Image 1 (cartoon, rainbow, N blue to C red):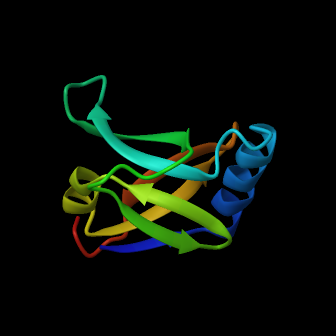
Image 2 (cartoon, helix red, strand yellow):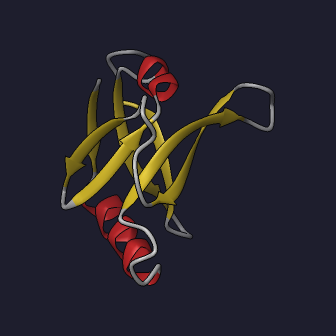
Image 3 (cartoon, helix red, strand yellow):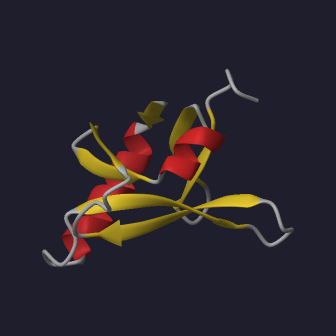
Length: 96
């Protein structure tokens, strides 16, 4: 899996971790169901990886990546959507 974290997303994720006051040390990218029944990626705070998760460190942020996310997005970009600083995971282009 090739993954990229934009600088804007890294800032939002670091602020979220700081806001957890040490309760979380990383960000988990977990597969979930979207509203339309399709695949969605949940972005959540986490304290340790699950046994099957990949651990990736980018832009000063540790990510725990669910294997289903890695399969669905072999080339992923973690970015921020305006106007509310919502963190999203989208295809990096090579797998679209």
